[in-house]
Amino acid sequence: MPAVLVERADGIAVVRLNRPQRLNAINQDVRHELPPALAALNADPGVRALVLAGAAAGAGYQLALYCDLRVAHPEAKIGQPEVKTGLASILGTSLMRWHLPFGMNAELSLLGDFISGERAAQLGLINRLVPRGEVMATAIELARALGARPPNALRLTKAHMRELTQAAFDDILVAARRYQRLAYEAGEPQRLFKELSKGKGS
Figure 1 (cartoon, rainbow, N blue to C red):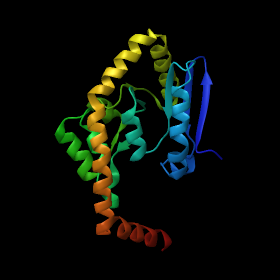
Figure 2 (cartoon, rainbow, N blue to C red; figure 1 turned 90 degrees about the vertical axis):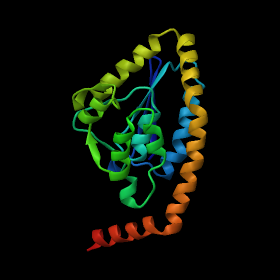
Figure 3 (tube, rainbow, N blue to C red; figure 1 turned 135 degrees about the vertical axis):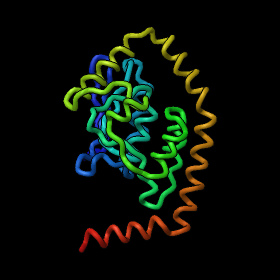
């Protein structure tokens, strides 16, 4: 079963993370399948906008932060729980600096607790807060609105937005690799994983 599903209709592509039994948590299959799927859609002139759908926290939340717009329901759980697993919160923390005041970024990154979709909307992390059953329809509606805009103006605006962030993002990836290597060298993630595995087995 593919870990990533792609649908196209009327210039809109919907990319779904297809691991519902694992809450769409990012694994090697997703990491392997998602980049080429997105690259193919980016190269397709018939695709005017894209909807990325999933229900994962952690790395899934970071995927949402890459998107231009975000849609969620009030009961959604959104967070950056890496520190609870012994990993440094580097990528998410760095991405959130473009969206949140430093104090709130610190709270999410250092405590690792979840906030609701309602609270995320209040903080500006969510662009549209709608009932659970309306999330996908609203996301597609926004995608159609983007697709209806003059394409060159949209492309140039997005190009400039990327110029504002790309250099910093490249540095973030280097930092993320360095700090996660240090985390594993200290052995904390491995220890916590073993403790969690024992707890599940008892």
